[in-house]
Amino acid sequence: MLFPWQQQDWQRLNAERARLPNAWLFIGPAGTGKLEFALHLAQSLLCEQLQADHQPCGQCEGCRWFEHGTHPDFRRLSPQTEEEEEGKEAKPGRKLPLIKIEAVRQVIEFAHLTAHRAGQRIVVVEPAENLNPAAANALLKILEEPPQDVLFLLVAQAAQRLLPTIRSRCRQFPLSAPSPAQALDWLRQQGVSNAEAELAHNGGAPLFDHDPVLAKLRSQFVDGLGQPTFASILNLAELVDKQKLPLAIPLGWLGKWLHDLAGLSLAGIVRYHPEQQAVLQQLVARCDPVALMRCQDALQQLAPFGQHTLNTRLQLEALLMDYLKIFAGGRQG
Image 1 (cartoon, one colour):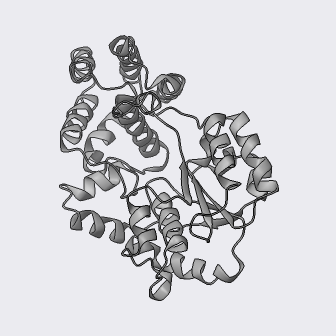
Image 2 (cartoon, rainbow, N blue to C red):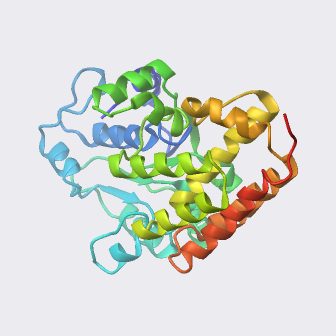
Image 3 (cartoon, rainbow, N blue to C red):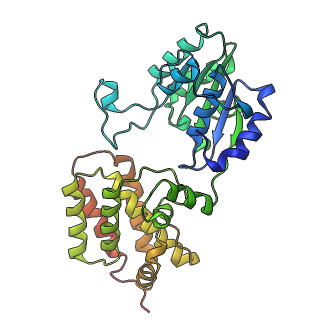
C-alpha cells in the first residue's frame, strides 16, 4: 500500500525500473512509510499480473502469497522479539535492538536458491541500521557479490549508522515526508481522535500506533510535568508503575517535554506539545538551563535500558527528581 504523499516517489522510482540496482536503500524520517513503500515495491516485482503504473494486482497467486506472508521468493529480515524467537506470542514493547547474524545467514541461503516462480527473489531488511556488526559484515559480503536476480531493499531512518561500505553498495532513495496538511488529513480519515495534538506529539510523522488508553495516560503524565512538585513526581511514578509500562514509554514522554522546554527557551519553538505552550512558557521562566541539560543527559543514559522491567519505578523516580531540580533555583520572571 502506498500513502498519498508517496505517489511522486513511486513515479520517480518507476522511471528507474529499467536499470534496477542489486540493492536499494530507502531513507527518511521515522513514521512516514518507508517500510510500506519497500513492501509495495517488493509485491509489485513479484506480482504476475501488473496493473497500470506498475501497481500490483492484489489478485494473482503471487500477490495472495505475498499478502499472507508466504511467498517463496520473498524474505523480510528484521529484529525478532524474545517471544518470537521462542515461538510464543510477542508482547508489545519487547523488540530486541539488533538483527542477528543467524537471521542473515538464513537470508544468504535463501538468496542462493533458485526462484520458485522463475522471477526475482526479494529481501527486505529493516531497520537496516539495527544489524549487529557480525550481521552487517555478513550482509556486506553478499551485497558485494549478489546472486543473479536477487534484489535487496534496505530501509533505514539512521543511515549514518550503517557501514559506509554497505551504503556504497546500495542506491540510496530518499523518501518524501508528508506535509503537515497531508499528515493531518490522513489521520482524520483514519478516525484518530485529537489528530492535531497526536500528530504534534509524534513529531509530524503520521504513522504511529494510536492507543487511546496510552494517549490518556500520556496526557495525565504531561499534566503532572506541567506542575512540578514533589507530590506530583511521586504520583507520576506511581501512575507508570500501576500500568506496568516499560520504562521506554515514560522516557519518551519526558524526553519530548524536555525537548520543548529547551526549544522554547532557546528558540521560542514548541514541537511536541503546542497545546501546552502557555504552561511551558511559565516553566521556562523558572528553568535552570544547566539543570535542564543534566536532566536530558540522565535521560539519555537511561534510554538504552528502556525495555528492562527491573526497578522501573525507582529509576523513573530518580529521573523525575532531576526534573524537579530544573525549577528549584532557576531564573525568575
